[in-house]
Amino acid sequence: MNLFDFFKFSFHAHNEIADNGADKVLSSGEENSSVHKTYVNFLTSRKRALDAPLYAISSGRSMVEMLGVLAIIGVLSVGAISGYSKAMMKYKLNKQREQITAVMSAMIEYQSIISTITTNESIVPTLIKLNALPPEMIINKNSTHLQDVLGLSIAITRAGKSCVYYTFYMTDFADDNHTICRNILESLKEYSSVLYALGVNSTTAEDVNQQDWYFSQKIHMLNVNTMQNVCEKCDKYSCGIYAIVCNGQF
Image (cartoon, rainbow, N blue to C red; front, side, top):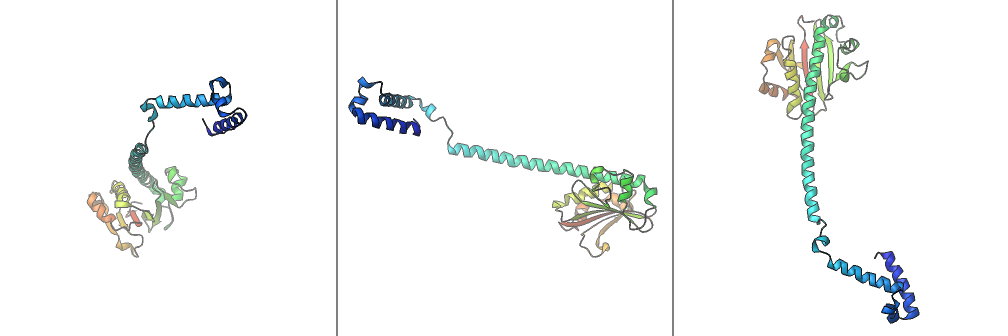
Protein backbone atom coordinates (compact mmCIF):
# COMPACT_ATOMS: atom_id res chain seq x y z
CA MET A 1 0.00 0.00 0.00
CA ASN A 2 1.54 3.28 -1.09
CA LEU A 3 1.00 6.65 0.53
CA PHE A 4 -1.80 7.62 -1.84
CA ASP A 5 -3.69 4.37 -1.23
CA PHE A 6 -3.19 4.79 2.51
CA PHE A 7 -4.79 8.24 2.52
CA LYS A 8 -7.57 7.02 0.23
CA PHE A 9 -8.24 4.10 2.55
CA SER A 10 -8.20 6.38 5.61
CA PHE A 11 -10.66 8.76 3.97
CA HIS A 12 -13.16 6.00 3.10
CA ALA A 13 -12.67 4.31 6.46
CA HIS A 14 -13.41 7.53 8.27
CA ASN A 15 -16.59 8.10 6.29
CA GLU A 16 -17.90 4.54 6.58
CA ILE A 17 -17.07 4.26 10.24
CA ALA A 18 -18.72 7.61 10.87
CA ASP A 19 -21.86 6.44 9.01
CA ASN A 20 -22.07 2.81 10.12
CA GLY A 21 -19.82 2.34 13.14
CA ALA A 22 -16.51 0.47 13.35
CA ASP A 23 -17.97 -2.90 14.38
CA LYS A 24 -20.46 -2.97 11.54
CA VAL A 25 -17.93 -1.89 8.93
CA LEU A 26 -15.40 -4.62 9.82
CA SER A 27 -17.99 -7.34 10.44
CA SER A 28 -18.35 -10.28 8.04
CA GLY A 29 -21.76 -8.99 6.99
CA GLU A 30 -20.22 -5.93 5.33
CA GLU A 31 -17.71 -7.64 3.07
CA ASN A 32 -18.65 -5.44 0.15
CA SER A 33 -17.54 -2.27 1.84
CA SER A 34 -14.30 -0.70 0.52
CA VAL A 35 -12.91 -0.48 4.04
CA HIS A 36 -13.49 -4.16 4.68
CA LYS A 37 -11.90 -5.20 1.36
CA THR A 38 -8.85 -2.98 1.89
CA TYR A 39 -8.47 -4.23 5.45
CA VAL A 40 -8.60 -7.86 4.34
CA ASN A 41 -6.15 -7.21 1.47
CA PHE A 42 -3.79 -5.54 3.88
CA LEU A 43 -3.82 -8.54 6.22
CA THR A 44 -3.33 -10.93 3.29
CA SER A 45 -0.35 -9.02 1.84
CA ARG A 46 1.13 -8.75 5.32
CA LYS A 47 0.87 -12.50 5.81
CA ARG A 48 2.47 -13.16 2.40
CA ALA A 49 5.40 -10.93 3.24
CA LEU A 50 5.97 -12.72 6.53
CA ASP A 51 5.69 -16.12 4.89
CA ALA A 52 8.25 -15.27 2.16
CA PRO A 53 11.57 -17.24 2.27
CA LEU A 54 14.45 -15.50 4.00
CA TYR A 55 16.63 -15.54 0.85
CA ALA A 56 13.90 -13.67 -1.04
CA ILE A 57 13.80 -10.96 1.59
CA SER A 58 17.57 -10.52 1.81
CA SER A 59 18.48 -10.93 -1.87
CA GLY A 60 19.84 -7.35 -2.21
CA ARG A 61 23.53 -6.38 -1.94
CA SER A 62 24.86 -4.82 1.22
CA MET A 63 26.70 -1.51 1.21
CA VAL A 64 29.97 -3.26 2.10
CA GLU A 65 29.63 -5.58 -0.91
CA MET A 66 28.93 -2.63 -3.23
CA LEU A 67 31.94 -0.72 -1.89
CA GLY A 68 34.08 -3.81 -2.45
CA VAL A 69 32.95 -4.07 -6.07
CA LEU A 70 33.62 -0.36 -6.64
CA ALA A 71 37.10 -0.69 -5.11
CA ILE A 72 37.95 -3.58 -7.44
CA ILE A 73 36.68 -1.64 -10.47
CA GLY A 74 38.78 1.36 -9.39
CA VAL A 75 41.97 -0.71 -9.10
CA LEU A 76 41.39 -2.31 -12.51
CA SER A 77 40.70 1.11 -14.06
CA VAL A 78 43.95 2.59 -12.70
CA GLY A 79 45.89 -0.39 -14.06
CA ALA A 80 44.24 -0.08 -17.46
CA ILE A 81 44.95 3.67 -17.67
CA SER A 82 48.58 3.14 -16.68
CA GLY A 83 49.02 0.42 -19.28
CA TYR A 84 47.40 2.57 -21.94
CA SER A 85 49.67 5.52 -21.11
CA LYS A 86 52.81 3.37 -21.41
CA ALA A 87 51.64 1.87 -24.69
CA MET A 88 50.80 5.31 -26.09
CA MET A 89 54.21 6.69 -25.07
CA LYS A 90 55.97 3.75 -26.72
CA TYR A 91 53.97 4.36 -29.89
CA LYS A 92 54.91 8.06 -29.91
CA LEU A 93 58.60 7.32 -29.40
CA ASN A 94 58.56 4.89 -32.33
CA LYS A 95 56.69 7.46 -34.41
CA GLN A 96 59.25 10.12 -33.49
CA ARG A 97 62.05 7.89 -34.76
CA GLU A 98 60.20 7.42 -38.04
CA GLN A 99 59.83 11.18 -38.41
CA ILE A 100 63.52 11.81 -37.71
CA THR A 101 64.39 9.20 -40.31
CA ALA A 102 62.08 10.87 -42.84
CA VAL A 103 63.64 14.31 -42.28
CA MET A 104 67.22 13.04 -42.43
CA SER A 105 66.43 11.11 -45.61
CA ALA A 106 64.97 14.28 -47.17
CA MET A 107 68.06 16.29 -46.25
CA ILE A 108 70.31 13.69 -47.83
CA GLU A 109 68.20 13.32 -50.97
CA TYR A 110 67.88 17.06 -51.63
CA GLN A 111 71.34 18.15 -50.46
CA SER A 112 72.10 19.81 -53.83
CA ILE A 113 69.04 22.06 -53.46
CA ILE A 114 69.72 22.72 -49.78
CA SER A 115 73.25 23.86 -50.60
CA THR A 116 71.81 26.82 -52.56
CA ILE A 117 69.79 28.17 -49.61
CA THR A 118 71.00 31.39 -48.00
CA THR A 119 72.93 31.25 -44.73
CA ASN A 120 70.75 31.47 -41.58
CA GLU A 121 67.65 30.72 -43.64
CA SER A 122 65.20 27.97 -42.68
CA ILE A 123 65.25 24.94 -44.92
CA VAL A 124 61.75 23.86 -43.86
CA PRO A 125 59.81 25.88 -46.51
CA THR A 126 61.93 24.36 -49.27
CA LEU A 127 61.39 20.82 -48.01
CA ILE A 128 57.64 21.52 -47.74
CA LYS A 129 57.54 22.64 -51.40
CA LEU A 130 59.36 19.46 -52.36
CA ASN A 131 56.78 17.36 -50.44
CA ALA A 132 59.72 15.79 -48.68
CA LEU A 133 58.35 15.93 -45.14
CA PRO A 134 55.69 13.90 -43.27
CA PRO A 135 52.47 16.00 -43.49
CA GLU A 136 51.73 15.62 -39.76
CA MET A 137 54.96 17.49 -38.94
CA ILE A 138 54.01 20.58 -40.94
CA ILE A 139 52.36 23.30 -38.87
CA ASN A 140 51.22 25.24 -41.95
CA LYS A 141 52.41 25.74 -45.52
CA ASN A 142 54.49 28.78 -44.49
CA SER A 143 56.13 27.06 -41.53
CA THR A 144 59.74 27.74 -40.68
CA HIS A 145 59.63 25.11 -37.94
CA LEU A 146 58.32 21.57 -37.74
CA GLN A 147 56.56 19.77 -34.92
CA ASP A 148 57.00 16.09 -34.15
CA VAL A 149 54.50 13.62 -32.69
CA LEU A 150 55.51 14.60 -29.15
CA GLY A 151 54.98 18.30 -29.83
CA LEU A 152 58.65 19.24 -29.96
CA SER A 153 59.61 22.23 -32.07
CA ILE A 154 62.19 21.38 -34.76
CA ALA A 155 64.29 23.86 -36.71
CA ILE A 156 66.40 23.06 -39.79
CA THR A 157 68.62 26.01 -40.61
CA ARG A 158 71.39 26.71 -43.07
CA ALA A 159 74.50 27.94 -41.20
CA GLY A 160 77.90 29.02 -42.48
CA LYS A 161 79.09 28.05 -45.93
CA SER A 162 78.39 24.33 -45.77
CA CYS A 163 76.46 23.39 -42.66
CA VAL A 164 72.89 22.61 -41.67
CA TYR A 165 71.66 22.67 -38.08
CA TYR A 166 68.90 20.17 -37.32
CA THR A 167 67.70 21.25 -33.88
CA PHE A 168 65.15 19.86 -31.41
CA TYR A 169 63.85 22.27 -28.79
CA MET A 170 62.34 20.92 -25.59
CA THR A 171 61.29 24.08 -23.79
CA ASP A 172 58.66 23.78 -21.04
CA PHE A 173 58.45 20.12 -21.98
CA ALA A 174 58.80 17.43 -19.31
CA ASP A 175 61.18 14.59 -20.20
CA ASP A 176 61.13 12.25 -17.22
CA ASN A 177 64.27 10.10 -17.04
CA HIS A 178 65.42 11.76 -20.32
CA THR A 179 63.53 9.13 -22.31
CA ILE A 180 62.79 11.48 -25.21
CA CYS A 181 66.32 12.89 -25.31
CA ARG A 182 67.80 9.38 -25.56
CA ASN A 183 65.28 8.43 -28.22
CA ILE A 184 66.38 11.35 -30.40
CA LEU A 185 70.07 10.57 -29.92
CA GLU A 186 69.52 6.91 -30.75
CA SER A 187 67.67 7.92 -33.93
CA LEU A 188 70.36 10.37 -35.04
CA LYS A 189 73.12 7.90 -34.20
CA GLU A 190 71.99 5.86 -37.22
CA TYR A 191 73.25 8.74 -39.41
CA SER A 192 76.70 9.02 -37.83
CA SER A 193 78.28 8.63 -41.29
CA VAL A 194 76.79 11.93 -42.52
CA LEU A 195 76.72 13.91 -39.27
CA TYR A 196 79.55 16.28 -38.50
CA ALA A 197 78.58 16.67 -34.85
CA LEU A 198 75.90 15.87 -32.33
CA GLY A 199 75.41 18.04 -29.26
CA VAL A 200 73.07 18.40 -26.28
CA ASN A 201 72.71 21.19 -23.77
CA SER A 202 70.27 23.20 -21.75
CA THR A 203 68.58 25.83 -23.91
CA THR A 204 69.32 28.28 -21.08
CA ALA A 205 73.08 27.89 -21.65
CA GLU A 206 74.72 31.18 -22.60
CA ASP A 207 77.38 29.63 -24.82
CA VAL A 208 77.01 26.86 -27.39
CA ASN A 209 80.41 25.57 -26.25
CA GLN A 210 78.76 24.48 -23.00
CA GLN A 211 77.30 21.58 -24.95
CA ASP A 212 78.65 18.05 -24.92
CA TRP A 213 79.73 17.53 -28.52
CA TYR A 214 80.37 14.25 -30.27
CA PHE A 215 82.09 14.56 -33.62
CA SER A 216 82.03 12.46 -36.78
CA GLN A 217 82.62 8.75 -36.29
CA LYS A 218 82.61 9.04 -32.49
CA ILE A 219 78.84 9.45 -32.73
CA HIS A 220 78.32 5.77 -33.47
CA MET A 221 80.20 4.96 -30.24
CA LEU A 222 77.45 6.49 -28.10
CA ASN A 223 75.88 3.86 -25.85
CA VAL A 224 72.87 3.97 -23.55
CA ASN A 225 74.85 5.02 -20.48
CA THR A 226 76.73 7.73 -22.38
CA MET A 227 73.47 9.04 -23.86
CA GLN A 228 71.95 9.19 -20.37
CA ASN A 229 74.95 11.19 -19.10
CA VAL A 230 74.77 13.53 -22.09
CA CYS A 231 71.01 14.06 -21.68
CA GLU A 232 71.51 14.99 -18.03
CA LYS A 233 73.04 18.21 -19.35
CA CYS A 234 69.45 19.18 -20.13
CA ASP A 235 67.26 20.86 -17.59
CA LYS A 236 64.11 18.82 -17.01
CA TYR A 237 61.99 21.39 -18.84
CA SER A 238 64.61 22.99 -21.09
CA CYS A 239 66.85 21.24 -23.58
CA GLY A 240 68.28 21.54 -27.07
CA ILE A 241 69.59 18.69 -29.22
CA TYR A 242 71.70 19.68 -32.23
CA ALA A 243 72.61 17.53 -35.21
CA ILE A 244 75.03 19.27 -37.57
CA VAL A 245 75.66 18.23 -41.15
CA CYS A 246 78.54 20.08 -42.77
CA ASN A 247 82.25 19.92 -43.57
CA GLY A 248 81.67 19.32 -47.24
CA GLN A 249 78.50 17.22 -46.89
CA PHE A 250 76.41 20.06 -48.34
